[in-house]
Image (cartoon, rainbow, N blue to C red; front, side):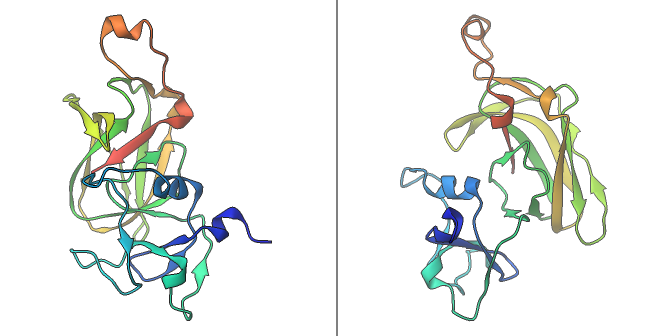
Length: 199
């Protein structure tokens, strides 16, 4: 008997051309309603060979549009494109990053306490470890319609696929507002629901 994931109408094409089943978070993302002009809307490929404007293969695609000779695999290794929220308990996922300096933001609120929370990125090709730096300039903004606060900066010296590993997740505390009066009535966002945004 097939699982719910296997029955879902969409699958995902990675940049290397492999096609895999979706995980629960991706299924929820595709089932979210977005406004027509929202830049956070998922990118849906019309055909397997279709490429993004920057000539990449990745993207969601209807299962029925996958060529018969391409096997759809099940894997715990999910590649996360930049600007896709990552749950802080979602260690072991892979993210593709180009050379550059990236902002790391917490999604959900503007009153943020980091404590010893951090994460590392391990280059899958050469094993090098990259650590983010905590920033003193904690700008607040909106990402995909949600409150976001910049907490770290990430310097990527080499393009590649990186495995993300989170540490001390319980130290990260987030409340929706940073106004003192409002905080008296607001509950802390459940720690297991917290996500970061790299972009």
